[in-house]
Image (tube, rainbow, N blue to C red; front, side):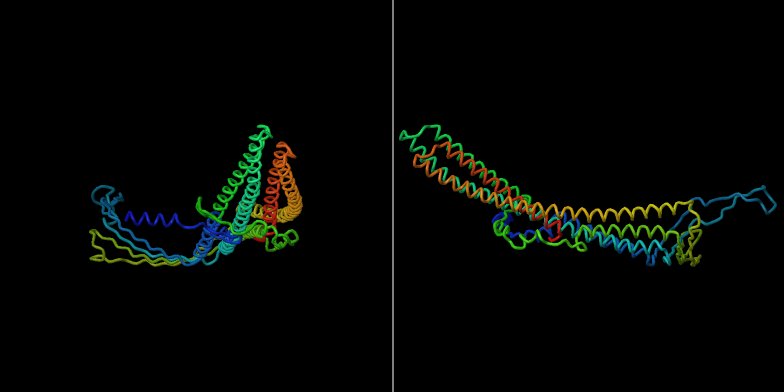
Length: 436
């Protein structure tokens, strides 16, 4: 058994990393993100709630049984009608043992609140389903941003790592020139410091990539520590025609999930108002009851003394008459709540339009910044290459080399930041357009 457990553990640890494209990550987040799982359970609860409320209007059958044993049979004092003896005599009405069993059937015949309540439960179930779709949309959005963040950090680590060999070569040349007496120790130290800064920056980008993968695992509902390989390339995603054209996508009001949920709230408040109104209508219930009762001086059910039946049916009519204004004010409150929901729906629509235009502007600005930072990065790389060549030939000082290398590191940081900003801006624009 121990050997089998060891082999099973080794097999589990030997499993390769999870390979994910951006589309696969979005689909996985929509299925197994923790928030999505919770929303699915809430939607399932709402479906059962609809069935529960539906069952309230169907026949209800109950059975009841009981047995009683009077250790001391109740005694009452009554006037002595015999004429002899005391004026009042004690009398026991009843026997020590009794048993009964009954079946009762009830049926709701008419109740306006039940009809409206059934419609409201279905509206609540629909809202839960829409909330589930909203949770899936948010999960896709979070997964996209985490995916882009990991790719951007990987790109930053790659860019910085490209400059490390050049600095190592410059440091080796500086140390050789120092040994030959053609350079001072200060020049060598400057190159050493710059090399260490580049290595620190590379490690920082790699840590950011690890954190982004942890966030991606959390969004995807995967255990922390799950190794992941992101198969899409950042440059290809940024050049994707669908992503580039996203800034010109029109806004579709009727299918936007946020406004669908706002419509759900308006419908629920409308049904609440209707429910308060129909509470003023009469309600009618029917019932049927059959009972078998046995009594005896000794415990012998069905022996010398038989069971005696009791059967009845009837109707119960409830007619509201006067509530001293209570029903009127409840209707007024429900009407104001409906108006409030309509105002909130209008506000949500206008807020979405404002957010959409803001995200369009963010995408355009981020695109322009990325192009500018790309040009700056190319220039900084060319300058470093020329300065390193001059430094190797003794035509440039270590101060100039380290200064240009610092400029390159700064350009790399800005480029990676502009990439992340553009990716996040597109993700937020897609969310505002409800295109996940």
